[in-house]
Image (cartoon, each protein chain N blue to C red):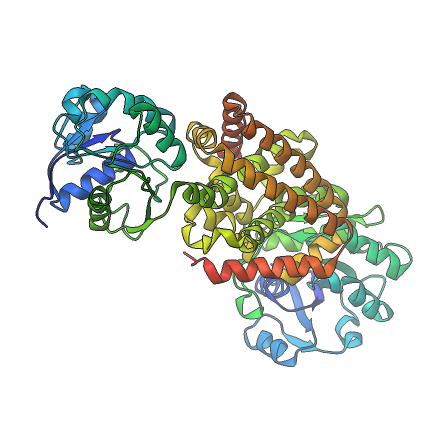
Amino acid sequence: MSAILNKVTIIGVGLIGGSFAKGIKQAGLVEEVIGFGHNDANLQLAVELGVIDSFTTDMAEAVDGSDLVFLAVPLGAMKTVLAEMKPYLSSKTIITDGGSAKSSVILSAQEVFGELPENFVPGHPIAGKEKSGVAAADEALYVNHRVILTPTEKTALSALAVVKQLWLALGANVEVMNAQQHDEIFAATSHLPHLLAFALVDMLNEHEELGDVFKYTAGGFRDFTRIASSDAVMWRDIVMYNSTAIAKWLKYYGQAITELTELVENKDAQALYTLFDEAKKARDKHIVQK
Amino acid sequence: MSAILNKVTIIGVGLIGGSFAKGIKQAGLVEEVIGFGHNDANLQLAVELGVIDSFTTDMAEAVDGSDLVFLAVPLGAMKTVLAEMKPYLSSKTIITDGGSAKSSVILSAQEVFGELPENFVPGHPIAGKEKSGVAAADEALYVNHRVILTPTEKTALSALAVVKQLWLALGANVEVMNAQQHDEIFAATSHLPHLLAFALVDMLNEHEELGDVFKYTAGGFRDFTRIASSDAVMWRDIVMYNSTAIAKWLKYYGQAITELTELVENKDAQALYTLFDEAKKARDKHIVQK
């Protein structure tokens, strides 16, 4: 492929930003990828690994003349970074991000810029690895993974098209939806399960009368609670920045647990069977085993 | 090893019973293993696979002169099978089982025999496979897996010792505890997570406004809900036969979800961080990654 952008800026060169950078560089879609961050050693490593071409810790230098800025920072840092780059941004620069909650990033942009920039294309790549950090950056991270783009009412179709083209070149499956829909879906399918797993491990840990209860757990428990080994800071931020949708789904789930408890107390064999059977069928139908 | 038992009877020759049979045969601990069931073809296959030596569909023949009977039938069938074998059982025959709830099996024995037999050794091997049935029977299934034995007040130490010796010979780690403790621990660590996973999949499946929501799920969701693909009949039975302990832990969990919902609604970042961090630390400390 031939380059479609001259300068791309990566704000936050870790697993997500680094994999994006490495991928678009290797695909030949960009002349120059510059990384911005606060950790010289990390940025130097990124250059050595071929993830970025150069780096800076100066925001003016980072975004000056940039065609596209990719914000790959924690949700809690989005607003600060947007405010920091605002003085140096050209109105032509496309801004996109990788945050796993979208309404909050859009609200931050609204607050920082006064009105939503035309070239702002919020996004969420659904990809991760057990390892994090730039050393784990992988140009193939997004292959066959879903990337959700959530353009605002103001987003220019041309900017959306460019961001989409980059993700497609990385092998991702790109979908477009509105931010609220995104936040609802991921509250239900990702944020909620994480909270449920954290809550279960905490509960077992706190009930000391169970003794050393974890030693009796088997593979099912290990799988069920794997996501409870996720980073606590990241998940605190996700909850803070998608709290409305998450609270809603937690309440629905709490109701489901109340109803299930009644079925168990009433020993309603038929209703329990139906519930389990429908869940099993739905999962077996929809979830490809890997 | 030399044989310590002449005749062992396996009631229900599937994965659990078949793996036990194959293991003690290969270890040379028993002269003869006879399988009992209702499906000739299945029992014939078990003989061909070397899982059992012979089979019968006649209960009198199955248990007559047997040194040890292993009940590897669903929890819902335990009482019926005990009643069916009662007329043919010698008081010397050791009775053990593989049910995943223990108080209910003990209650069934109490009801069938009037008083608890001295040679009754309730047990629960914590092992399974994705495949079920006798074709999946594997003499190594229990190697390094935990087997919980829950002797009653009446259980003779000699009977407990024999059952323990068999499991140890299969490579299992044997632990002894009382049935109520067992049922509490497994309600909390196994039965509860299964119900939570079933409930989540059902909830997402029923909220049609989410659309084809499962397509947005990733590896975390796949792991978290893997146990929701478990057999609905088996889990209905487990809930029916351990309902008291399960209802108790469901209520505790429901309270935990209510408290968590409040933290989310109040955007209590510090409390959320603490909860996630403690869960992560507890899991990372206790659960060996595989």
